Length: 198
Ligand SMILES: O=P(O)(O)OP(=O)(O)OP(=O)(O)OC[C@H]1O[C@@H](n2cnc3c(O)ncnc32)[C@H](O)[C@@H]1O
Ligand SMILES: [Mg+2]
Image (cartoon, rainbow, N blue to C red; front, top):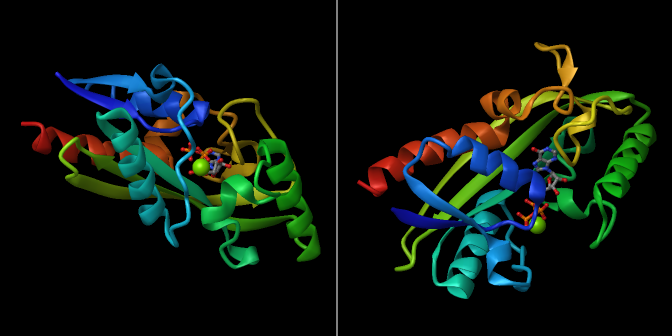
């Protein structure tokens, strides 16, 4: 069975990635099994470039095949910000609550209480021989300036899904995976990996 490292330090992503791959015939491992590895440098100009940088970096560090995710939120009224800077919107070591506070402040500066927005997720798989596979997923919704729900992570309590009349933080992990940017990208990657690992 193929051993794949879920190469992320984000616990929210880890849960979603492991749940999504439960029917794939692979052995998933966490980066934490390798001790305290350095952070990958995320200096690409696109989600796809950053995902590939992370997967390649951790494949070298662990000598194992790695699956990495680079993702973020694009808010229309902010011209697509925070985009690839979503994890550090409020500064380099910002946490979710600081980023969310900054996001609410930026909406206020534009004199709006909500805006159409899109989550984007790029996934990259890098094997031990350096060969790579990649794909993306997107999910559209409305960013609002108030939080609802306790689930998910990051911007989820502010990301409203009009079709469900709920935020991403008010649905279960399985429901989130069925519609989210990461869920859709993982479905894609599952199909690509099935062919690759045959
Ligand atoms: O780089 P790794 O170690 O994977 O973890 P990270 O949290 O730094 O991840 P990114 O660099 O890809 O930044 C993505 C940020 O975008 C936001 N984000 C991405 N997917 C999200 C989701 O499903 N729900 C809520 N926020 C999300 C959240 O703020 C993340 O920290
Ligand atoms: Mg990161």
